Length: 89
Image (cartoon, rainbow, N blue to C red; front, side, top):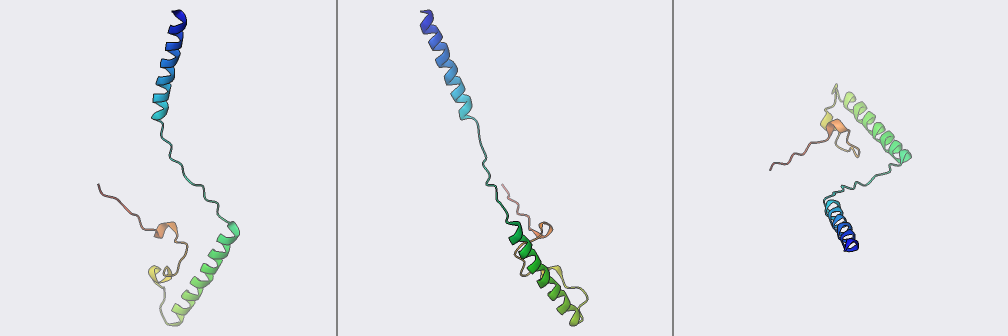
């Protein structure tokens, strides 16, 4: 009888453990690797395009182009220009 009680206790412990494990949640995120050379090339091209846009706007007599005008063709939007989306419940 002692032997069966030990087995029962171990079975009960295993069941409790499996219930606790079932409550564990895991939020997996994908780590993105950024190719530094590609990013640098994109930023340099963007820098050249923005400098040309500023040079063209000063030739036309406009002192400072608006940020929206400069951001028209951006492929990489700076964090402070990203729109914030909110969700209402």
